[in-house]
Length: 346
Image (tube, rainbow, N blue to C red; front, side, top):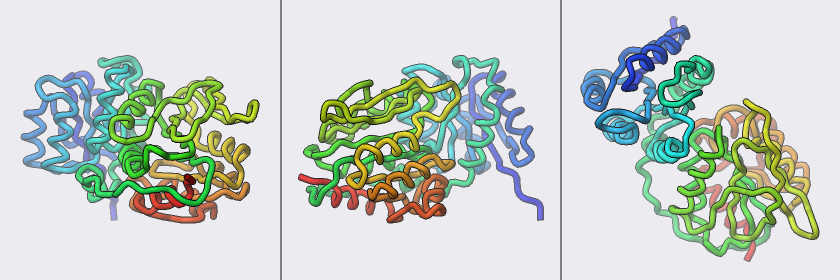
């Protein structure tokens, strides 16, 4: 039986970009562009007649902007959406809001809003559309509409460092976990969330600071790690830890172009060397296998390892850890929050 193609709606105000994006998607035998739209009005008309498997959405649109269109889609026709974003701080801020509002992933235009060289990201776009089309729609609805019902907890027992790795779908999951933790958290937390540029890490830190009681910041070079602070490993750099004058400090090194940043494996392997059995490693939703070797290092050092279960938006990274035998526990987000509470110390 012939496999059904992934049916895609392309939304972009530029006819040139709609044509280029459609041509790239149609070049893959597994994908078919079934419609295009230039503004919110056309989106409303199209979605009243058809139900695509995936949508690509430009952020800068006439009338309704990309975020408003996304919110409409999630309200009337929840569908996996891949955002097409530009390289700028403003676009990074909006993209973070879109991820919070239910977008599955995003692709950066190589050179601004009208990218004549958009074909440079063709393979990335194809992979992310295919991955997005496999996302469970019920999971998207849950992430967008779930109310904060978790109580704030107090901490008990002992650990010295928590390190969390996440990628696709990580924003909502990380928000839910951090929201449940008290401002008096007595240990530092490191988060390695895949982002393409530092703009996005900075925007994510700003967003988390608004929705959690904890202080969240982008890690700086040679910075001492303090209790109660959540450090985001910056995109564009690789982050490691080392002991210096009885303190643990972060060490940042510029990453080669096109490399995965920040690498969860590199961060976790470093945590394992410094904190050994007093480290808790957590892998959340995401594509690929980054974090598998890092969790191995933590487990071999005597630390504890936890992965998100199949409630993940994308089960790739957790599954890689599970299949390798490096997961001590496999839990939903609520269970992961409980483990953090148990491993924290007052």
